Length: 342
Image 1 (cartoon, rainbow, N blue to C red):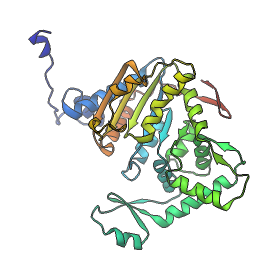
Image 2: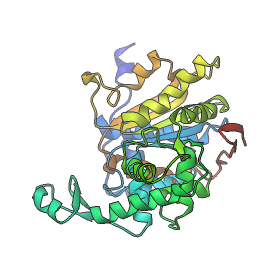
Image 3: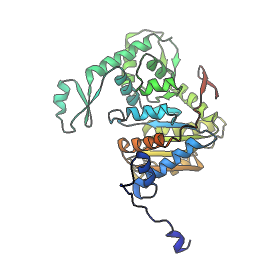
Image 4: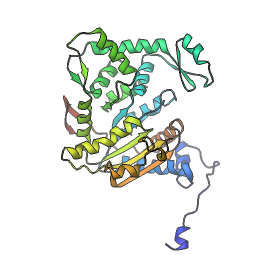
């Protein structure tokens, strides 16, 4: 490359006298540097996912204290506007959505609070947010009562989440909105959450035959979505089990004799660094060594805390209107078999 070619694109300073909307701000990010440019890059990749005529199936992985951080309606709106087709989440996030759907709240707290005093008052702390432990326990009991009425057979977490959501009425709820629009919700680490606590109460209080969770059924259900999709994209918010799970469906598909070719689009919002060697901070390039991300994938990472990055990203996409022409996929299930994607 010649010197003039290397220096062909100057950084564009953000002009706040011209920026009036979220979309204008994120568009301005595309010409800046450091993490604002990375956010702009991720926004551009997400736009291309939504506009791709092949209609990639978009998986969204959710981890972290997102409901406590005030992102409940941001995630709900991503579902309602067709920005996400499949949710893979920690149990805590969807549990706290259910908790709020039952009329309970998160409260602004103090990171320096006396936690022993909070315990005496049955108040739980999530960094600088409080929740009502008494209402958590009521919600645990609600979950145990809902599953008590289910036929005693194996269930995937997708089926369990549908049953838990159908007993609620809240237009701002993630789980209610997902069921309304046919967006499957997978919680691969269901036991490791307050949903698992409620299910344990059911288990102890009921004799055989019981309903039971079949986690490998989850693997097969979500892998079928990958197999039957012409293309797929992944949006990782944080890391942990949801990120790994969305990646692993490619490996499962290959083991079963399919060659779906990895995710064709991938973006992640994370605060984890790759040099510790853990999955949460691992790069999308590293995932290409496993075949989880397509060799020609559009991919981007922004290192920013999710309560800042996700509202900017989702707000930009909604306000820009790139979702308007997209037809969301419809998943047709018969038991654990995905018959087709319409």
